[in-house]
Image (tube, rainbow, N blue to C red):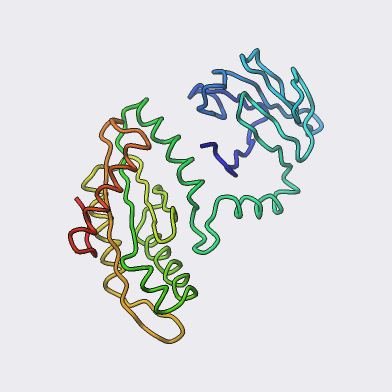
Length: 261
């Protein structure tokens, strides 16, 4: 899945784009050459893009180029990766577009598309460098019943409150997202299974210990969580998700409001 809406600020006068980890802007896609192209700022503040002899070419607005000047809003393509060039003056507008693209409309945390795009990239990197990763998938217990009894507006309120409680328990280096109707996930780079189990239990307790409220009425909500870990890059993105979902099913089969394994 491609990375949608991810911004890459150009903080240097010359930025090398490529698949190599040593590139200034690393794009880990097979169609990208190790040193694919460079973006450079000229003496008058203008920006240029120049191909560096790449295998699959560099394109500006669908036209292959060797060296060309960039204008605000241009689409620049390296292999099969497409970027939009945005000048700082128009950044507020593009910030709004970015938010709509990567954030969930109800909870304002990351959405499913962005989460799995980020996960694919990070798990591929973990396999290259043999680093630990962990994943938690969280599901609200009996959520469909809650929607039927209290209405969808109440359900949306529960989703927002849960997102806040997850965010409060989660370190800044971890990524949390809403990945389904009542399903959330936390991706934990560099974490081991015990770290993920501890965090999952903290989230479960944060939900269980304080009532939820909507339109002056308090009510109880609980969550179940499945946890998986990849030691030294042993799992890919699909495998760690599948294992976390398997453990989530186990938690529900064991009575809900618990964490598995």
